[in-house]
Amino acid sequence: MSAHDLLPSRPELSALASAQLAPPFLFGAATAAYQIEGAATEGGRGPSIWDRFSHEPGRTVNGDTGDVACDHYHRWRDDVALMSRLGLQAYRFSIAWSRVQPAGRGAWNDEGIAFYDRLVDALLERGIQPHATLYHWDLPQALQDAGGWARRDTAFHFADYAGKVGRVLGDRLASLCTHNEPWCTAVLGHEVGKFAPGLQAPALAAQVSHHLLLSHGLAVERLRADGVRAPLGIVLNQSPVSAASASAEDRAAAATEYARFVRWYMDPVFKGQYPEDPGIVHRPRVEPGDLATISAPIDLLGLNYYTRIWVSRSEPVQPRPDALGVTDMGWEIYPEGLRDQLLALHREYPNLPPVFITENGMAEADQLHEGQVDDPRRVAYLHAHLEAVAQARAAGVDVRGYFYWSLMDNYEWDSGYAKRFGIVHVDYTTQVRTPKASALWYRDTIARLQERQAGRG
Ligand code: IFM
Image 1 (spheres, rainbow, N blue to C red):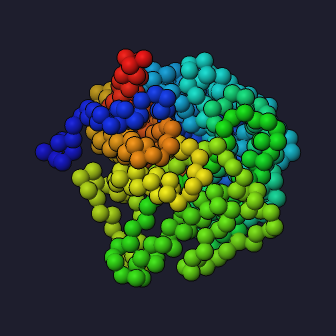
Image 2: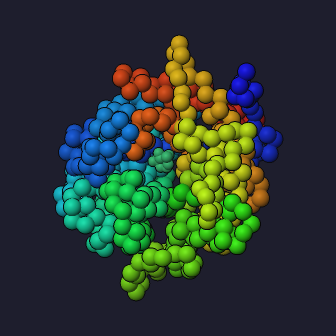
Image 3: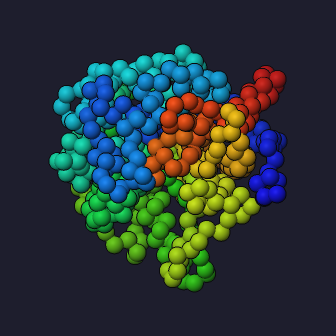
């Protein structure tokens, strides 16, 4: 018998969580364009930096690309029907800039815009709230060829693109976020080089981070000026950072990591300044007025949480897993970190807007067996993280919703199709979707919370 056999297959939410997560608290699932759409050369879509990067030898596991992915571009109707059968109340997706505007500036692509237009209407018809993100890492390659996010004018092109999306979809979206995880674009894309565009230039990465934040501010400014009604926000990936020992060196290193990972994005947006930390080496060139633009009020913060970070000056720190272990990505499962991070934001940012957990989930080596996928660890993961959200709410944090990452197995960037995050299994040969046990648990949990609420009404 393994430790996993001891996990309850259908855990129930505690009384506290049942009370805290009752409607109008929102339950949904999330995806991103390049990870699911496929149809990379169809419908007038222009190439993005991920098309270029994933086709370069050695960049991704097995050389996997998003050319086909989950073929959602053709199967979106069935996917919306599936969401409805799972009882999802909200769906978070991203818009591929190069579908809407193939070169990232200049001509718009009506066919690409129509795809998202139909998707939004189909969601609304099923009573599923559409939550869109404008940028989930797929810069039009033509803009990269001109310098990409290292160039200041890319931020202005982004604002034009945001304005177009706002004009077309802004009256029907339940929220519109500018960026997904700008830390990944800046650091993984321009410093570490493991994501597109695959550069290893730390000073440039700092400048890129500033242009991403500037583009957020400019987009919000444009959307507000155009009278877009959808609530506006940004999605940031965050983790609490723990020092591996009580030594002064480790504590300083942990503070620097937190400043680089969390405060570098939170402080400009919510305090109008970049953090000062002696460990931060590269600082961007900031023009007068930029920080005022970046810190204009927004309506929501999207928080993506996966694990906590351990920092040590001496040796690399291994995860210290508790009973739930580590995920197939090797990430420690630490639900308390979600509660702690929410509490930290509540404490540190007096003007924090309502928060949505826009991503939280785990990769597991799921197996399809006789038409079913049993994923008890994902059920336990979901259950524990929902309890953590409920605890944060009970302590006063205004969390309004939770989106599991991801609706379905999909293209996990440099890991290709080797890592499965979905509550729905995807057979990449046949494109057959099979809800896993976790999807059924999620469906039943959402339904129970709704029934409980109706019973009170
Ligand atoms: O798959 C990604 C997603 O695109 C962004 N946040 C983290 C997920 C899991 O790695």
